[in-house]
Image 1: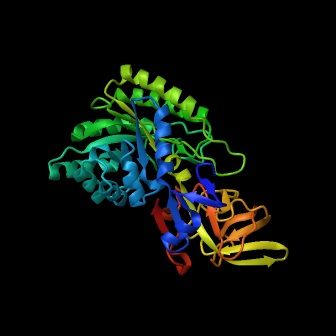
Image 2: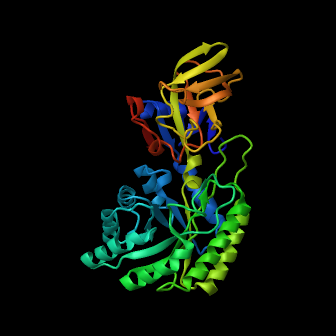
Image 3: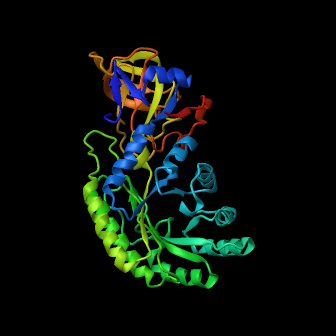
Length: 401
């Protein structure tokens, strides 16, 4: 992949040839995340965005503590979805005033922790209001709240739809005015709205349309709000290309659209700051998953490379994390990047299931036992989104380089 260099036939990650990095880690499989790529992703995006738009990192994409600490110094805020993620964000040095807490099933204790920490809670159900008010009274702290709205539209072309129709996420738009009355009655510190229509979208026009619709909806709902809107989280949805034929998202139309919305907000919602909440887009290209070939075998004319990694560490690459029809992630033999000899192979892991496939009938450099298989675009929804305990194989390492 273009974000990584190749030197003397080896992939270079974090300035190190892959074989040396593997020796430094001391084992395979492992994930490696490149600081330089992470920084470039944030800086290039900031170079396009209007100054008034805040950039938040959605921690669920990759909660590795060292990575979160690194990103906390580059972005404007962190969005979390559990008390466990809240701890990671605060330990990483994120300021509580710049942390928001979303999620459809927040337990009362989690809401109490959020109020005690001073973070912004994205309310997703009327049920959450009473525990927030009780925590506010018990702690002598104003519970900061924004309302997550389930809009009456969806992000067209998104890999995962998070809004529109019946959803467990957020409060249906038509129910928000009544909920805002309760927020007022309970004396909660209202700050704004959160609208997240979908994720993993590669169509700029769809993202722009969803942002415009989100802004218009927030403007209508602001008439019912108990206080001025100070935060308007438009979600994210920015996708990254994983599969053959997919193109990189064109950011310029989105930046132009946000500039227009920012100008409108300066008049319509003068105290509000627009927020982009991005996870996958920031971290996926910065990460690789590395495993080692432990066996090379043939079965009825097909070559299999059996590795020490697999779906228990990288469920998404195996096709079992949201794919309807399995497609290959970008994969390479990381220590033979310039090899002339190529062959069509299937790369599998060591698990006793036919689902444990990292690359199926894919042309790769000819590999042997001991070579290093690399799965690119692996910085998001990798280790933390995989069933690592399945079949009792060793845990996977993660490093930031």
